[in-house]
Image (cartoon, rainbow, N blue to C red; front, side, top):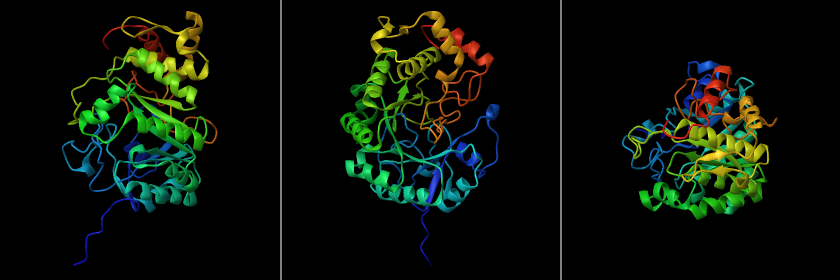
Amino acid sequence: MSERIKKESPDYVRISTATALSLGLMRGRFYRDAKNRCANLLVHYDKGCMANCAYCGLARKRAGAYIKKSFIMVEWPLFPMDVVIKAINEAPDYVRRTCISMITNGRCKRDTFTMTERLKTETTIPISILISPTILKVEDLRTLQEKGADMIGVAVDLATPELFDMYRGKGVSGPHTWDKYWQTARDGIEIFGKKNVGIHLMVGMGETERQMVSIMEELWNLGAVNHLFSFFAEPDSKLSDRKQPPWPTYLRIQLARYLLEEESIAFSDMGFDDDGHIIDFGLPKDELVTIINKGVPFMTGGCVDDKGDVACNRPFGNCLPGEKQWNYPYLPNSSELELIRENIFKIGPN
């Protein structure tokens, strides 16, 4: 009897449910006709990821078979790489980028090189890699660029070294370190260039608004772009009972990011109360409301397409569909903007 063929990378890949819908590999509809503009691929092995991040659906110690584990609260079905490449080439025009998410596994580096090269030679849209710094060296970043990636993401996630160690490092018997992630971010900026490295930051892990704004400014000054996420508990994970951050907190941090990156407002221009809440954004109220009314500060931030528009918009990756979104995958409408204006300056529980 022949051996069972393992359905693992680089020949197989998991894709997000939203990607499967956009590529026509699953049937379904998006709330408010949101479009998933990036094909999100996840490297897959039966043994899974060796890391144990407390909030991650793919954590080593999370209960259940690895293939059934969700990631950012959605299922990631497994498909042959050939099928995914064909679907990308036949996808609607709004699919404008591909992103490969690495995991912490000894085989992942080699197979990510192979998958990146295939995407470069067999598809036409740009390629990002959400890298796993723990298993990479500087030369590996150069290899990813040579194979065809033009942008990378680094999921620092936590706003302070203490929180990072608590939730990704020694606190959960995990392999990741703050210093390695930051050095990889610096190396990535040197290799890929300014604004071609996106840093994932997750709100709601015990940091203050002041701490989050501070790290966002530091990263922006280095040449990275800040991609914001909200904590959204994975069932059966170590933090499954933890609540999302208060919505007004997340709105304020989104607005602060926009002001730092688009309006040249500095951290030192802003004011904070004794608990670290933002109480002054460094602009007169009427100017601030004009910016809020654009709606753009509250849309998902991610890697851009070849026209400079956000491609990695992750529809409903932070919350369930509804008027109150932690990251809007579309421009907020008038009723959503009204809700934002009513809540953004509130201090206290959700």
